[in-house]
Length: 72
Image (cartoon, rainbow, N blue to C red; front, top):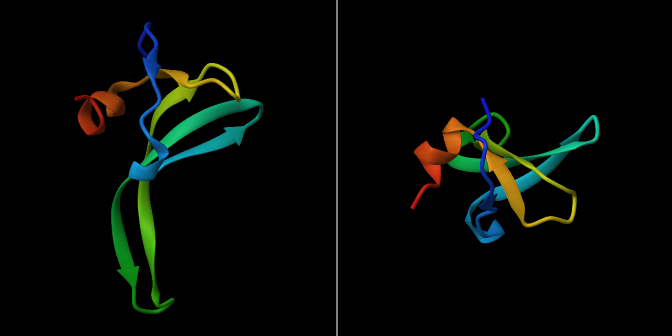
């Protein structure tokens, strides 16, 4: 469920990535990393925290995961 207000997208240095699916850009937050001994590298654990208003925009509509992981 997306909330009905806009917030600024957090700084990308803190595990924030963007992914476009079917023309909609979603904002993901990497909240943990798990080491895979088979592959010998870490795999991030991501969750979506919002939906971007526009591809070049710096604001998004947050969802409930945003309040858990990124709310100041």
